[in-house]
Image (tube, rainbow over all chains, first blue to last red; front, side, top):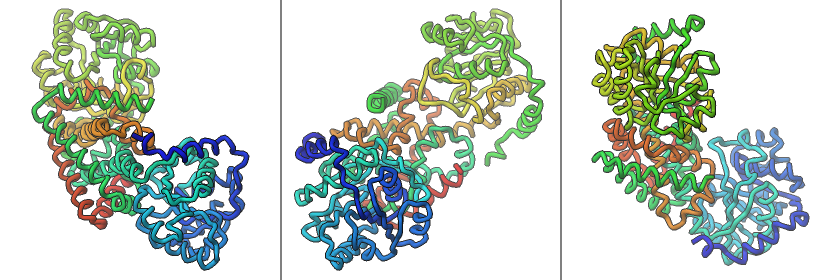
Amino acid sequence: MLNNLFRSSGISRLGRHKTKKSMTAIINNLCVIGTGLIGGSLCLSLKQAGACKHITGAGRSEQTLQKAEQLNIIDDYKTDIAKAVKDADVVFVSVPLGAMQSVFEQIAKGLQKAGNSKAIITDAGSSKQQVLQLAEKIFPDHGRRFVAGHPIAGTENSGPEAAFADLYKNRRVILTPTANTDTDAVERVTSLWQQTGASVETMDAQHHDKVLAATSHLPHLLAFGLVHCLENMEDIEDVFRFAAGGFRDVTRIASSDPVMWRDICLNNREPILDMLQRYRVEMDMLYNALQSSDGEKLKEVFEHAKQTRDKFTH
Amino acid sequence: MLNNLFRSSGISRLGRHKTKKSMTAIINNLCVIGTGLIGGSLCLSLKQAGACKHITGAGRSEQTLQKAEQLNIIDDYKTDIAKAVKDADVVFVSVPLGAMQSVFEQIAKGLQKAGNSKAIITDAGSSKQQVLQLAEKIFPDHGRRFVAGHPIAGTENSGPEAAFADLYKNRRVILTPTANTDTDAVERVTSLWQQTGASVETMDAQHHDKVLAATSHLPHLLAFGLVHCLENMEDIEDVFRFAAGGFRDVTRIASSDPVMWRDICLNNREPILDMLQRYRVEMDMLYNALQSSDGEKLKEVFEHAKQTRDKFTH
């Protein structure tokens, strides 16, 4: 399935690129919009790799930008995004999906005003189809210089304080270029991510959104739902007092940023609804098996699940 | 809620006991039936604490017992449970709940034949009401010498190779004695667990089963269900290839032992069905909120869940 969806030209191009690390161009001016966990960790990692001469931060909250500057995540900052992108070679957007449209509009305005038509724009949004639609609408030439991306990495923490240089080491980054996307822009963004220690793959945005709904968005909803469901029990104190490692692991991601996850749900609505529907069928089956004390059925499901997980994680 | 259910006399007694660690009696002969993760870790921990003179292993599989002996978890073993318990001061039963009845019957037979009426029997089963029913039926004097217990600890791994001495350190152990249970037996089992570094609490078996259904059994079913649900997707390779830490954490416990979890489900059926029903209502609510693109509702649920988890885990 995946093989069919891979942009095969992209793959071979990226493959060659990977072996020529010494040829990697240094970015003179990187502008990072949103200097929290995702953007901040990229900055720290690129600085550590010596891959960036200057990083300008931008964003809505001056307090966050000040903190990021104090932590040496960025070299300076501007609260006006249009001004921040003026001299950028690369603009990296790591804001919640719900803020994407407004940020894109300010970037387009700033680049146009400065006559900067070479800047490459890329993002870190967790769903890609809607981001691409925005980019094609807002940026010149149907977003020719925009490379949609998604690092498969993160923690349940947020903000500049949560950022660390190794976040992307040995992790995967998915790029979802379209037929419009400039080849050199894809190469540049690929190289940028490779310098964080990540491996880069390209795929179709629709496929990305489907896989991520299963692998990330559904599990987050389950975890939020589990904790919220238990909140209303009269025994909530005990539930957490007697929670073992299993419970803590399952619910870890329920400590994730609510606004970010609201936006992801709304942006990737259809694939997530599809996964929730599949999951409801599954859980109803388990309910019915237990209600009828069907031990054979329960064991069969548990065995399959264990085999599948063990196979893919070892 | 919990306070009402605590056996207050038990609590104060256990509290005093905790401060008298030097008075702790050493167990001359411990018999452990089931020498996997739970039983094996108890043996290693008690040996490390010098709390046990001799440990005899017993169980169904000679291969497992041989492995446990090689790993110095036990000093010797017998495949005949009735013979193994003959000289025991304490018998610890750590077998899947489905094997409990047969194991209890063999213990009762062995103790009776040897004229051993002083041995204390305790277990590590994850649900307590059905275990207590069995014990009261099978052991003499309505299970006067039986102390139902449950260490809130474990990993997704099983077998003697998975055992380690620190498994119970700083973890909680719940005992659910009844009105029939001998006070000295409860004290002895409390002391045994304290020597592993665990803290011991007593509560009503019904309350235990309800809390554990929420805190452990439901999360396991969610994890098994999630992996099993994804198995049927055509993109299963991708799902695991692009799985980040969140997915791995949520599904870790889906690698748990299927037989053990089938037995837990069947033994704690009613409280688990109740939790599955509550969870279904919760997930339907999330589905409907997303279907109607109700971002406010989603954010509200996510915020509540995050606050609750952060509050109880920090």
